[in-house]
Length: 578
Image (cartoon, rainbow, N blue to C red; front, top):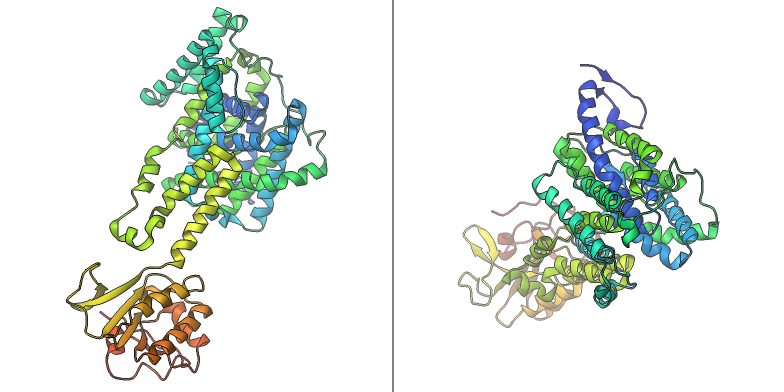
C-alpha cells in the first residue's frame, strides 16, 4: 500500500495519505456535493443575497479549511445560523440597497475571517467555552424557529413580514388568505419529499431530488408564467476576486464587533462537529488551528464574493457517514462546485422559491430539539431544589433565555442574553453554596438527614462541609450559615474542607473573623482536611492567627493539639480519614 508524505503545517489530513483512501474520499465528496449545492443556494437566500453567492463561498471555504484546519472530516460552507446572523447584522446597515447589502455581506465575511485568524494566532481557542451547551442549544432552537417562520411565506407564496418571530408569525396569519395554490403544492410537496427521503432513504440526497423535481415541474408546466416565483437568472462562471467595492475602512471597523458574534457561533458549532467525528475516528483536533481554518475560509470566501461560512454538523455527518477519510473529500466537493458554477447554473435558474424554502425548512427543522430542552428541564431533584431554589434548573433557564432572546430581540442580542443569564445564574449558585451538616456513619462522615433530627449527630458538636470553593462571592453567605449553627448547645464547630478545592484571601479573612466571633461565644472553630490550593493559601495568607487546622475530622474533635502550632507552619501531608 502506497502512502504520500506531505511536509509543512498545511493539509495535515493528507499527511501519510494512502491510495486506499481515494475511493471513499471521492464517494463522500460526491455525496456531500449533492447536499451542499441546494443548501448553499438556500442559505444564501437566508442571508438575503443572490443564491449563487452561496456557491461562491463554498469553493474557497472548502479548499482553505482543508489547508489550514485540523479536522479530517469537517465540511465548511454556508450555514443557516451564520447566514441568519449575517442578514440580521447587514440589514440595518444596508437597508433596501441590494448592492450595498451584497457588498456589506462580503465585507462581513472578511471581517469575521480576520477576527478568527487573530484569535487563532493568539491561541484563543478556549473562547468557545464562553458559550455553554445549553445556551447554544437554546440559541439554535430560537434561530431555527426564526428561519422557519421566515421561509414559510415563500412556501405558500404570500408576502413576507418583517420584525421578530412573533411579528412575522402575525404577518403570515394576516396574509395567509392570499396564498398561491400552485406555489403551495410545489412547496409542500418538496418539503414532504425531502423529509420522506431523509426518513426512509437516508443515503439518497433528498435536497437534490427535491430541487431537481421542482425544476422539472417548472419546465414541464410553465409554472413561472403562472405565478410561481423562481430563483431567476444566475450569473454563470467564477466570481470576481478582491475586496468588495463601496465598503470603506470605517465600515470594516464597524463590522468587527458583529463579526466576533459570527465567529463565536461558527466556531462553537464547527468545533463541536469536528470533535464529534475526531473522537469516532480516533484522532484529536486543535482548537486554535480550527480558528485559523475558520478564519482562512471566511477571508477566502469574502475575497471570492462569498458570504460568511462555518463548519456544518449536518454535512460533516453526511461526509463521515459516506466514509470520508481525509479532507480530499472536501477538495472533491470544491471541484464539483466549480463545475456547477461553470456548467450548471442555468439549470438552477428555474428552481422554485418554494422548493428552496422547503430545503431550508427541512435542513433546520431537526435543529428544533425540544427533547434536549426537556432533558435540561428534568435536571432537578428535591435536594437540589432545597439548595438552589429557582436557580436549580440553571441550564434550562439559560437555554430558554437564549431561545426567547432570539425570538423577541433578534439573533445577536439573543445570544448575549443567553450568555448573560447563564453567567448570572452561575454566580448566584456559587454565591450560595450548600453548607451540609455531617454525621458519623461507621467510618465515614456523611450528610445528615434533611428536615429531621439525626440520631447519629454528636452532642455539642457540628461538623459542616461547604460544597464549593470559598471566595469573595460566597464568603459572607458561608459565614452566616455556619454562625447560625452555633446554638446554645454547640461547643465545637468543625469545617471539613475536603470539598472546598480552593480559597481566596477574602475567604481566609472571613474564616479568621468567624473563629474569633465564635470564640467570644465560647464555641471552638476548627478546620479539618484542608487540601491542595485551600491548604496553600490559608497557610500563606493567615500566619500568626489562632486558626486550628487538623489533618482529619476525628483529630479536630479530639482534645489534643492540632497538626502544628498554626497555619504559618509549612503544610503537612493530608491524611485522608476513612
